[in-house]
Length: 369
Image 1 (tube, one colour):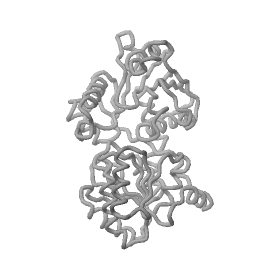
Image 2: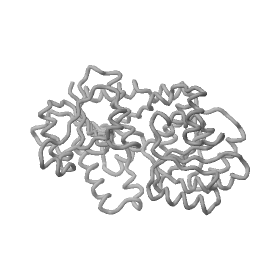
Image 3: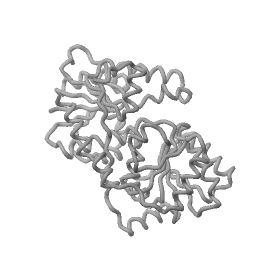
Image 4: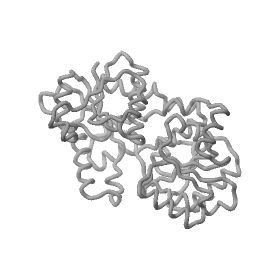
């Protein structure tokens, strides 16, 4: 079977949708190597391409017009390339699919919708961006043969905002990279600790820096208990403007010696950092899924996160929950868990729910049904 993918995120995004895309592609090739996988992307990051472990045919724009206007190729021109390569199933991995004409009706269209944050947290998005996202998701919901939601929360949002029939939506939880389940040696831990000058005891947060990720409240919560513990706070993420706001707050609270910011960590080092952490704290106001929670649980690290529906869905009883609106709710739980010295999640249980084979099996069944 010839299966095509919108690989823009897989080959260009280090986090979020890029992680989802690469995890799926690697899972599919690992468990179904007999299929033919085609990746369509106007740009390619060689570092991210190297994270794909399998045989994938890469397709880029090959006309002057498409090279000049890659967005146009991705939304329309790519359809001609799909037909030329006899693609039987096309999977839009990040909330959209191209505009198919009647000559491409034989191609099965699958789309993954990750979340509708642009509608639920409108103040965080410029008006024009919201209109573009709404149009793309609306078109995908109308024309896709199968809609994949990353959580029951996203499924319900699609029903509420776009009036999609529940029967057309399939909830498929994404997998966690197998590296997070694998043990690491003390030597590896020490090497990573020295490489990034990590403290002996620290609380970890891994996330992009946006207002809805709520790192500001986490920093305030940590400040209120910093005198009661020798732990540090480690924030791993990009360099968005919200990070600068967080860095200023750390200075204002006189926590510069207790709070560390890191970015651009190689994928091979992240599992070790999770395992070195005493706990992982994720205070986001809204998510479509929450893969860092799964990564932390897979690493056997204690997880504290916001009491929101999709996190309950993912973490179940393996996670401790707090009110993300209240710094005191976060700080009290962090201090309690520090004092308890309790172990983290049961990794064996987590691997059954978020394994690569389960992820691949569910997707292949959607492609072939």
